[in-house]
Amino acid sequence: MPGFQASAPEAVLDALFLPFSDGLLQLPADGAALFLRARDGFRLRELASRNWLCEQSFKPFADALTRSGFHVGEAPAEARFKQVLVLPPRQREEARAWFAKAARYASGGGVVVACVPNAEGAKSAQADLAALLGTVSHLSKHKCRVFWGVSDASCDQALLEAWLELDRPRPNAAGYISRPGLFAWDRVDAASALLAEHLPQDLHGRVADFGAGYGYLAAQIIARCPKVTALDLYEAEARALEPARLNVEQALREQARELAFELHWHDVTQGVVRRYDAVVCNPPFHQGRADLPDLGRAFITQAAHALLPHGRLWLVANRHLPYEATLTAHFEQVRSVAMQEGFKVIEASEVRG
Image 1: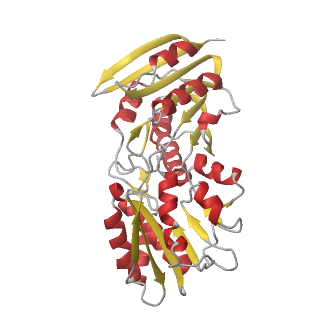
Image 2: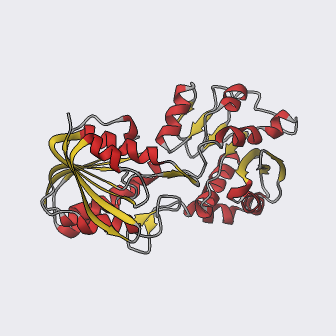
Image 3: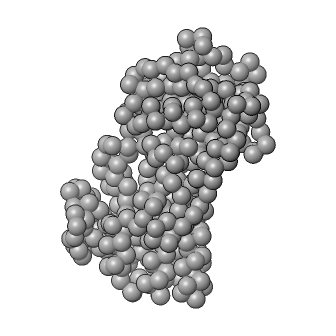
């Protein structure tokens, strides 16, 4: 999940626009700007032109921007902007890739403006942008730091190219294709590994992976469940989709299997259209540093709605998360399969209603 706490966007946006409200920077006269990892909020709606292009890879945040009337998409590689704003993530390699992308889009004298909460590495992020652009200015507000600089001839082009490469999908320590900033991007998540270990061989038909990430569980379904004939991967973070596709294709090659699969950039808490013989998931339960178990409860609820009457949900979660009431509200049968290393694997079946 992205690295902002649920209450943070308004404070971050207010700090981001501080150089403009203080008169240190001017908003583009033509009303055009690029906002990378954009977030919707009052301050954005108040100050930004609807001509701004907002890039946001996390589906719920992208949907919020669209509802507010902003154009959400990806700028062509050759496009250049006088103003590029960016909200860098906590993960440093991913943040550096975003800085490089911002500097490239602002090259030729455009201004890059970034804002980071102090508790999420603001000083380090400012130092990174300064290393790239040569010099930056900064202000502080709401326990956030906003910093900016010009992308011109002083920009370190070698560093820019090296940092752009940080976002390229590549093998992690476990051999799966991933990229910085994805959940457990550099390893196999222990909870997902526990769930994979207990997946039954008799899973069959069409299966959905809710919150598929870079595709680890989907690859394990292919390897362990020979009766599965179709697989749908649902993931709210668009940056995970290409690694997931590559990992599924690799798993199919390794198992010498033919299996129909589709990837969906989708927020499963809003429900899905298709119906499934099984749903497998390791649902997210936090955003930034805040535990939000309602996310997991929403995954369970939508999994129940997505299952055929005979369908089964296979779920892994942290032991302390209070999911049992939600599970028993939607399923007649709820069975604890494993309890290990702080995680629980649960099978739920016989959907109520």
